[in-house]
Amino acid sequence: MLPVRPSSCGDNRPHGAGGEPPLKSAVRIIEIYRMNRILLASAFLFSTISTALADEIPSAVPAALGQVPAAVGAAPKAPAPKLVEPHLHIARSNVAGHARIALTFDACMGRADERILSTLVRERIPATIFVTARWLKRNPAAVAVFLQNPDLFELENHGQNHIPAVDTPTLIYGIASAGSPQAVRQEVEGGAAAMVGAGIPAPHWFRGSTAKYDLSAIGQIRAMGYRIAGYSVNGDGGSLLGAVITEKRIASARDGDVVISHINQPTHAAGEGVAKALVDLKAKGTQFVRLEDVEDTGDDKTTE
Ligand SMILES: [Zn+2]
Image 1 (cartoon, protein in one colour):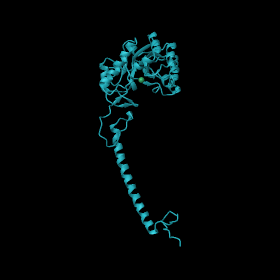
Image 2 (image 1 turned 180 degrees about the vertical axis):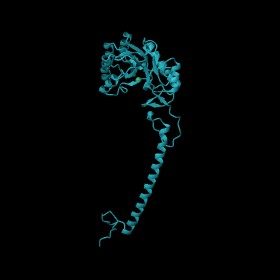
Image 3 (image 1 turned 90 degrees about the vertical axis):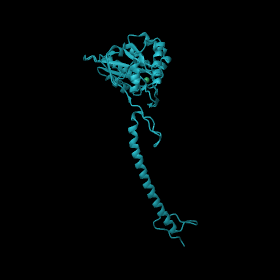
Image 4 (image 1 turned 30 degrees about the vertical axis):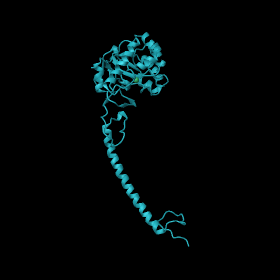
C-alpha cells in the first residue's frame, strides 16, 4: 500500500523507509513557517537599527577622508580634523588676449617628466616647481636644469617625505597625515633643508602633499614664514587623467588662474596633455608668471 502524502507538501519525493509519517511532516512544515516569520521580523528590526546608526555615522566623519568607523558601538575616537583645500589666485593682467597664468608643478616622488621639462625650457615658459627632499635626491639632472634656468624656474617647498601637513592623525587618500605639530614642522623644515643643501635658494612658499591641511597646521606653517600655495585649476587630477582631458583643462585656464599639475610621472598619459597645453597657452598669448613675480590671494588664511 502506498503511503498517503499531505497535499500541502511541495515535496513529491516518496517518503521511504525512515521517512516521517504524514501528520508529523505537517506539524514540521507549520513550525518552519513560524520560524521563517520570526526570522523575517528579526531581520527587519535589525535593518531598521542599522539604518538608524548609519544615519548618525556620516555626520561625525567627513566623507572626504574616506574613513569608515571600525565597528558600530566601538569606543568613540577623537573627531577627524576638518580639512581644507585652499584656493589661490594671482592678480589678473586684465589685458584681452594676454591672460596671466601661474603654472605650478609638484615633484612629489619618482622621476622627472622630460616631456614637460623639455617643453618648458624649449618654449621659455616660466613655472613654479614644488619639490620634495625625496624627489631632489633622485633627480640631480633635472635639478641641474632648473638651476641653469633661474629666469624660468622658481623652486619651492613640497616637504621632506610627501606627508600631508595635517597636525592630527588621519588618512588622506590613504596617506597617513603628519599627525602632530612636531611632524608638520619636520616635514616643512626637512623639505627646506634639502633644497638649500642642493644649492637652491631658501623657499618662501609651501605646498603640502595632497594640498589639504587643517587650519591649525596652516597657522603653524604661516608662522614659520611661508605662504601656502593653493590653486584654482586642477590641471591633471593628480596626474591620473588622460592626455586629452588634461590638455583641455589646462588650456582653458583664465586670467588670474593658478594651475596645479605634476612633473613627476613620466609614464602617465597626463604628462603628454600637460606638454601640449603649454604650447596651446603660449599660442594664445598667455602671460606666464611665477608665484614670486605677482600679487596673489589665497583663501583659508594661506597668504594674508
Ligand atoms: Zn605631491
